[in-house]
Image (cartoon, rainbow, N blue to C red):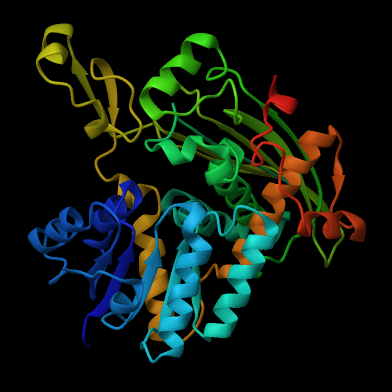
Length: 413
């Protein structure tokens, strides 16, 4: 069987991480890259690390004509334009077998719906990349517990948290370009992961029906004068004028359509976690059973003293988003695999080879976008939102949060 040719649109931090993950996926090569910056470096990495002969293409259309599938790893605010270019390329004859889009699918419900319709117009299978649903610790725990769940009943509570000290790129901090703050950036992970965890074995990924959502958003660290100035100096983003939330927490209630049982998904996310680095914490609890995943309980720990740290600063080599390069450090030997990137790539490639959508398609991505935007709306209104209310669903269709409008000061200060 010939290698599956994958093309990357975007060459930033995520694309680099995915390229590392791709080395662990059989029968796939990174055959092309299109990006405004970093394309040459990413192509060189692919060529130097056995990922195939990777070329740099000057346009989306050219990339699409030399690949079996393409990924959209570019910033949120250019997604609609890029997918439009992909659709035009397909209609002009590009032989794509599928298109991947990184989370979040859209910055608003309207934007996510537009992307879903574009994919239908293009007639290509889709994959929505939500890596945490592919994390081996979670899938292994659910597989181990499956007989218990069938005997004792489904899980009733899932808790999921993703926290670190803040994003790498300026656009992530800008709510008008990113679509919000940490809720838009990371709660999409936690909400989807808890939804996935609560779903009974052998049921579709969207089996449980969302019925209610409550949420709080806050600006706890990066709104302080000292840190506002730091953010302005490093990223050029002024949180005195257009702030976004750096902390969010909430609960989504789901209903089992077969039994009417209500179950709860709790999410907590922050850009103010100043410990070892990125932390993923997931729990699932059912009647007389449970599981827990903590990404900082690592198999490797190292110690770096002050003198050594002053000689070599390599904090983020140990762990993504690490803010320290000395002391006792947690080290993840294979972050790309731990976080689910390897398995989500393998799932998408297998699905596209078979002419179908991946485990999570863009319709699922739309549903996650709805839940995130409903959380923003609930936080603004300071109430629990009834997702079964047709009026609420209609309002979500045209909704842009105050934070995403650049009016975050009205709800955060």
